Length: 168
Image (cartoon, rainbow, N blue to C red; front, side):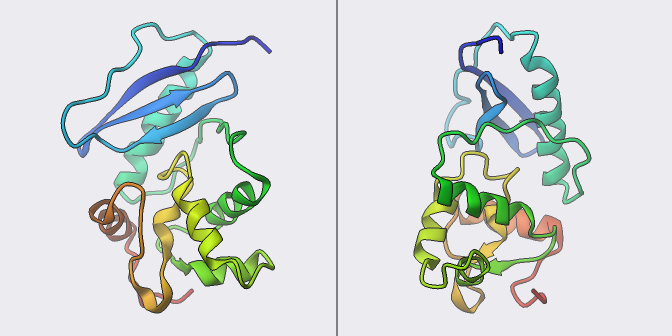
């Protein structure tokens, strides 16, 4: 595999500019629009990264519109632990417009006492739009936390038509 240095590129949307970081394996992180100025992006884009970035940009814009994504960029989740990657895989199986609680995800992973660990794995999610941790709620349907902030969590759930009372 050709090695490329990490590359950071802006993802322009109507909701602001996200920052995508790519490794040699794919999209390694996605940051929400900064509160102040856009973070510095790299000027040189390796040829290998261009199609990944096009897919990332399209996926982010599609998700913000509440629609289903047809083509995903490759994800580099190598920095996660085995448990985190298991949580992230479970998150990707939550359908658009549906929600789960941290406890439900823990039980789904056969770790019924690990709801807090599931929450920490959600917080460590490097690509929070593409791995939809915004679909996870606290007990009783409370919003809980979100790496992008509760404003973003509300916005994403609303775009998907999700409600806290929606059938799981």
